[in-house]
Image (spheres, rainbow, N blue to C red):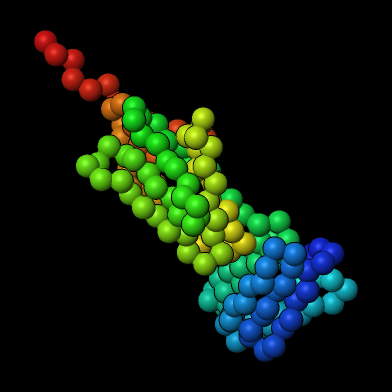
Length: 174
């Protein structure tokens, strides 16, 4: 499937190394040398040498990674997390780091890695993780969620917006 390159996005292909620049930033990645990547008429195409199983898998992976790079530098990615629980909250520090109070005896500090920013809506207790690298945005969101994953009995914890937590009944108490 061809990948359309939007206005304002430039793609530089040097062998198996591809650099994509756009209004939000720049991403560079090295792909498998067996895959051939071509840019013509603002459309990126990926070609595989044979129909071997390995080459088919690399073809799809390369195409998906390229599409994510183009989308990232033009629009960006975000993951939204919501905090449930009495006394659980998150605050944004002036340096851009996140401080979360999650029922531990201490607060949890999370520094954003290069290219990642946090936003916190304290009224709805929603944390937004934003960036141009889809892989890194998802990883940071997963690490934040791992501090207090949602538990099945009361539903307390950090979950993705729209995530359904399967609830359990608990003890009946006879």
